[in-house]
Image (cartoon, rainbow, N blue to C red; front, side):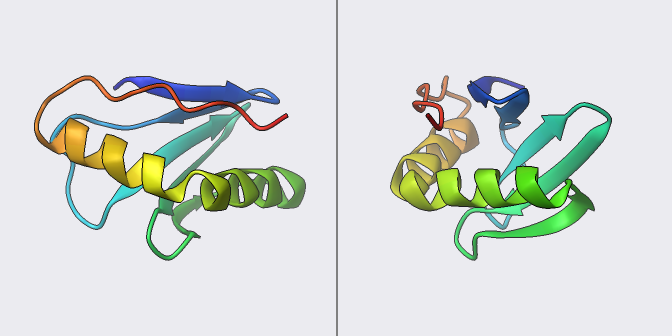
Length: 86
């Protein structure tokens, strides 16, 4: 599972050839969540409120890049790194 971005202790990852809908995985300390890229919402798991806000803000800024990376992973190709939230 490639890590495509890291910021504020949050690791953003995607699986190769994962199931629909397009999504990414977030791990932050003991928390884990799955975020729908198109809807920009957590569809599985839980993050603390502030971490959730940061992840969703970042995802909104990089939504097209996330969809592009999703398509690369679906084709079993290495996704591109996405700049972290600063």
